[in-house]
Length: 196
Image (cartoon, rainbow, N blue to C red):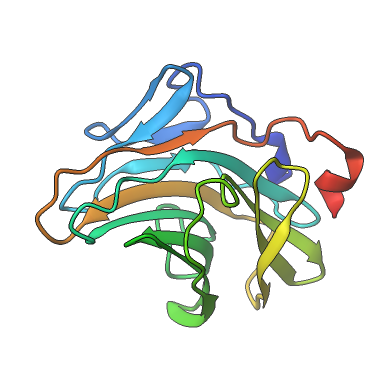
């Protein structure tokens, strides 16, 4: 199986060979992936096939999360063993109400998380990375060179077949703006940023 880092996209087009796109709320425009939150939480993008995260990573630029609005808009960016599911066996970033939830799940149960205040500068890049064995980290960066580990997880599930996905929704009354994604697994700027 191909390593997760081999899946790359600059979202210049809506590439259906790489991604399953929601028909109603996900598109590529201006070299970015735009996901409009819906009240049904249906839709976003998921990798078409699974990839091996062993010794690999999934990295994405997030130019913008949706505006806070009335505080009920949620955005999820994740790697998971179940396509389209961010809470079975998953490492994920949740953005809601101006905060990040950096969390991991196993067997459908929450395991651990940290909740830093969101910074559009410091959290512009997100990376899910396997460091060794079953140990994975969720990291953030302002520039994809200097990374801050937000969470370390020793996952009991297999890393050899995982999907990448993102979606957004809301549960209150909202006029949502887009979750904006760009540059999935672009070339790294230094060799150390790819592995450390």
